[in-house]
Amino acid sequence: MNKTVKIIVGIVLLILLIWVIKYFKDSNSASVEEFKTEKPFYSSINTKVVATGKLNPEEEIELKPQISGIVDEIMVEEGDIVEKGDLIAKIRVVPNEQSLVSASSRINTAQLSYNNAKTLFDRNKSLFEKGVISKQDFENSELSLNQALESLNQARNDYQIIKKGSLSGGSSANTNIIAQIAGTILEIPVREGDQVIESNNFNDGTTIATVADMNKMIFEGKVDEAEVGKLEEGKGIKVVLGALNEKEFPAKLTFVAPKGVEENGAVQFTIKADVEVERSTKIRAGYSANAEIEMESKDSVLVIKESLLQFNRITEKPFVEIKKADNTFEEKYVELGISDGINIEILEGVKEEDEIKVWNKASDENNENGRNR
Image 1 (cartoon, rainbow, N blue to C red):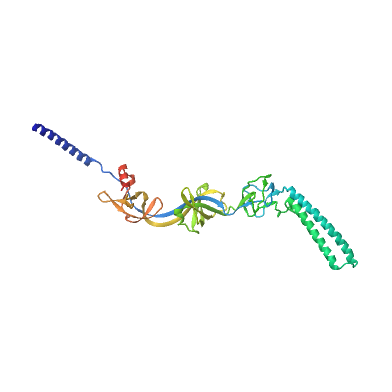
Image 2 (tube, rainbow, N blue to C red):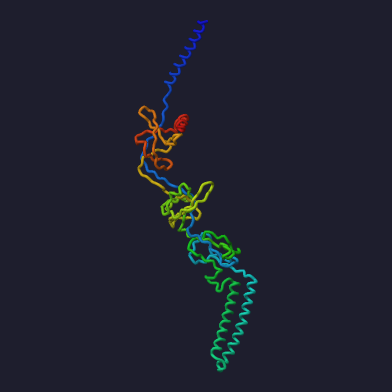
């Protein structure tokens, strides 16, 4: 029995010995895993804020009628360039029948008063020439005649205005729609024959045309609350138009809203900038645009690619792995500066000659270990 036990124990020990020899043989023959490395380098870093928005004219005016009526004639088309004072359209008045009858009645009343004053004046004139009445009585009758004539003329003018909308029909008539600024006709929302309403204290009125100076453009956009604190009015920026093959225009920041508006869970602040547009460039109102605002710039600073950074899972401190002479890697904590999203400035912890491990291009196992450090 003891002999059988000894044989079994011997066989087990022999198997264990063979497994140990094979394990060490396989371990020694496994290839050493290699990692790519990159070196720090000197470069310039520019950090910027990008605001999305639109390009609109600085001066945009809606032309509205001063009297209600029908659009009788439109003199221009959308896209036409006009000067200040040019005739845009004419309005034909459709008088209110009650107002017209009332005005006609006032003419008749004024005519009767005038006729009576004329009769008194003629009589007093004859008596004054004969010396029957005093000069003062004659002058009073003359004054009454002149006042009656003025009332008659006013009644006739009122009737003319109610019926036709103006007295002379000249360029100053309120039935004429005149351009108030020089610029381009952006929109004509009405057509000949449309009925329009006058602009007054209780009604905005019907827009006949919209005129804008396309040589004076402004950018209107929005930035996030995390970036608005870094903006300064008067700062030079760039405005990029995608519709013009990403053409860039210089601009100056003129307005940063003092109050933000919440949109989709984020607080946005409106900004405006004056854009310098060349007269030869064909700009259209409402173009989508991006404003690039440079926040901070540094030249010739030591940087690494931001993808080389790793972060301690507990302390959240950034570090990199530096290659040593024996081809192993050593963790080295670093102090960071500004970043442009691709490269990041290294203030302390890395030298130009150091070789940094490209941890996120290694095997899946090493990649996961690097992330969890």
